[in-house]
Length: 116
Length: 114
View 1 (spheres, each protein chain N blue to C red):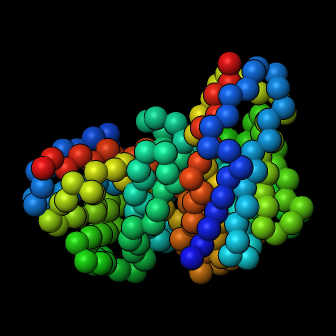
View 2: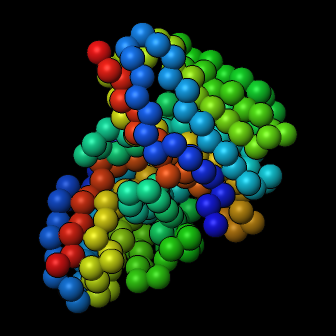
């Protein structure tokens, strides 16, 4: 059972407009959330994150919103640029009892295409 | 700058072969991870290690084993490759505890098992 879900496999937006990528989770033990971006034939790169004690985090054109009661987070990209075209993965962290490695649980990803 | 490197970008093997995927990181990170990425399934954790010689099973460890003899190197082993192990394999590393919220990924190895 997927604990982190990205229900939209793809999204197309016009250059300059807003892109909104959504993510839902089921595990209330998650305490930190991240978004990664992945280009073809490259590893994922970290984009932006948010702690569960916050509801918004902004970094330039990227803003992540967290709604804990709805177990929902979203990534807003404004304005969208063609170079933003990539697969975006939502990920959540929990702290298992064994060891000190905080594990990431990933969603299935959303392919964003920004049209010029 | 954190650098995670993987020994091969593309690999083609035959069913039943033993396959080694190597990962090296240069940032002295305690934690290292192996994932596979499949369409529609995202990244799934196979194994991770939080110290030399320590390993923990992830969500899908069946058919895989790992080795961590040195801090900077984490190997994924397919003892007898099968076609359903055709996938993109990604290695990652991180610091321990809260400092390790962000994982740094290598470029990936696309493995095809014929």
